[in-house]
Length: 88
Image (cartoon, rainbow, N blue to C red; front, side):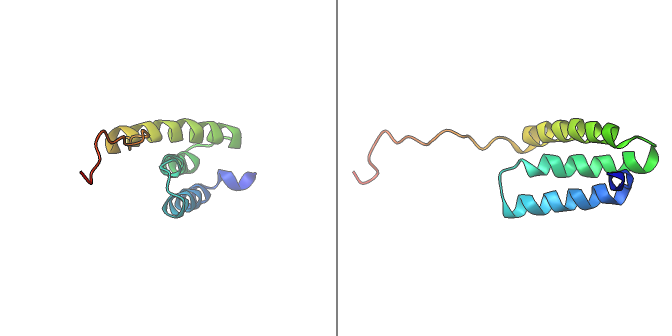
């Protein structure tokens, strides 16, 4: 658990989550990747404990997910319904 006190571990985690987003698209890993990338400076510049860094990671991930969803929009989850036949 002490490895999570090292700032570059958070950056590696962010890169791994960004890579997971490429292979498993779902727009959920982007928020976690940004949260990990934003947690790295906290680990480098402060002396927060691992539980405090985990809470910071969770909060920053949630905020970044909402911001990215706001910026990039929501790809509607509704099914497209056709009222007419396209062959007519």
